[in-house]
Image (cartoon, rainbow, N blue to C red):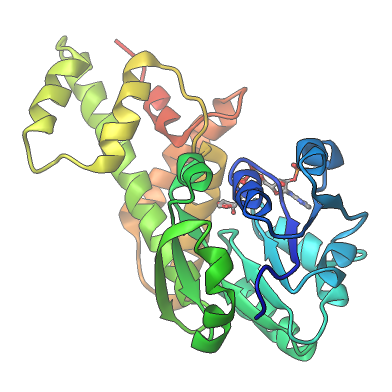
Length: 291
Ligand code: NA7
């Protein structure tokens, strides 16, 4: 692929927008589409072109990224009215960085093949911070040759790229990763509830944790939010709730029981239902009263 191919970008959310911004800043000609068009205003001021439909964004692109919230959102932008699939040109590479089911990734790959386009699933981990710094970790499924064609663009977005296998493999590992984060963060919330319920201070547990094998980078990041009770979304709880649902859906298909995940999903469901704002998943702590 020649230097600086035309890039299309669909989905300017908390993670999608800083990713797209990095490609614009790196000099890629960028066409964007977002359901709420006003969220593209600053990108347009920065030199991006605004497409009227996902189809138009796809038609302008040599490389088209999608980064939207969940499976229905991806289905809408790919196959809805004026959907992106209908605009793909032969040879275009569609890269989906949303977290969706492995089955949906395979469907998108089939649809691209029918258009003589190529597909990579490339869900990410690293949150808004990683997206802004270009230090995301990509979990990739698809052909090696497709990845090689788009690697220069991906290098502006990520610091590490795991090519995990054929379509579906990236999403499967992503769901397993997020399950682990969700369970770890819920385990800390439960431990803090026990400690404070016994009349001790949260900081006492955290001090001991810092010198123990129980320490984990995700807990280092989420613990201060749990102490302050302030949960600005880096990775929103509503998306973690969605990923736990996707993991359970996959586990049902495979016949692999996930009892801890099933229980955790109930906690995340309760907090999601009670939250009036868009909170980080560290807010799972609010399931238990703060002491
Ligand atoms: P956000 O901040 O929730 O942004 C979600 C994006 O998806 C945003 O652009 C939304 O458009 C778009 N969206 C949501 N529903 C639809 C439908 N039905 N049709 C079209 N577009 C839609 O998510 P993040 O950027 O943090 O994360 C994106 C993905 O990466 C997600 O899968 C994570 O799990 C990982 P809006 O601006 O609301 O109009």
